[in-house]
Image: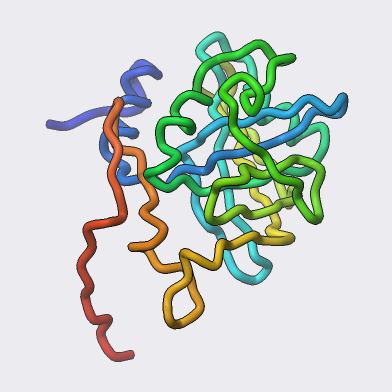
Length: 203
């Protein structure tokens, strides 16, 4: 199959990308509005950027009517957010927060998700997540315009909360103990419980 993306309808391009670029880690992003309303939403366009300085990126895609999501607006207005990772035990709660709620309604309260205070930023973190990264905005790049366009948000990691129970003997997070979920296409997800190792070639 050959596909010319330059003439592909936007929803078809989105569907092909999300079923080809996978598995994708999930950033469960908590933000707060200038008025103090909390928001919690998942994003699977998410990745680390660099360790110098420590940065990650999330990509809140616009709604199908072209409006920016609450997450993007809150980040633009406050410059802060928290990325919570998603283990299998929290997958159902994470999925619930993908619902489109009115801006004045908090996903933490609506879906009964316990929150914990952050250390360096105002948005709370998910209390049960094994790892949470507190971030401030480094750069925001607008890509495209209208429905399914996006804001590429690069965040500077200021502080991290890591549960002792997910650490391995080397003191670093153990993928088996974390049991994170990744996004595939449509309604499919994967887990980090099945893994294999390949020795890197000598340099």
